[in-house]
Length: 124
Image 1 (cartoon, rainbow, N blue to C red):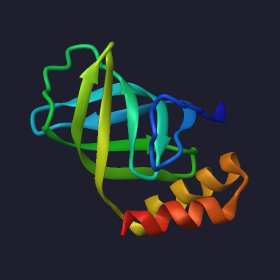
Image 2 (cartoon, rainbow, N blue to C red):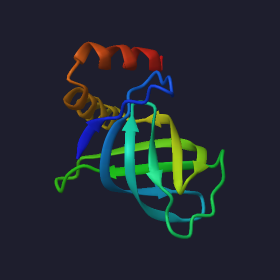
Image 3 (tube, helix red, strand yellow):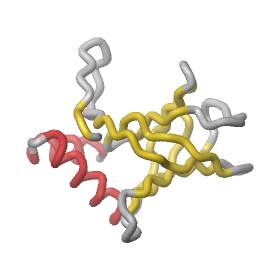
Image 4 (spheres, rainbow, N blue to C red):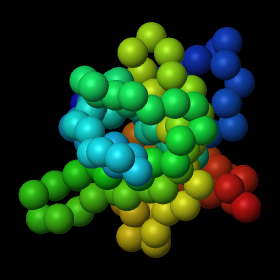
């Protein structure tokens, strides 16, 4: 379920973690069910939901349920790109509980606490 996604052609500052799990994208008009493709400390790539009519720049919320006990990641952001039936969401705001869950997910998958710390520091 988890793995890092190496992408030598794309020089990202934040490592992406492959994470195949259901999620919810909430726009101003509607709530959509989708699947997470990958997630990072700066955003996520999701499958384009059926009936999606959003556009680049739209403000959205992304909710990722992590467990049945209520643990979840919730980020506020905007649609950065839409292509190949995928939606890239750039995270603009995330609460402390959600960033803690995301940080732990990154640490478990990257296996390098210092790398995660550098990425967190880069968030500024």
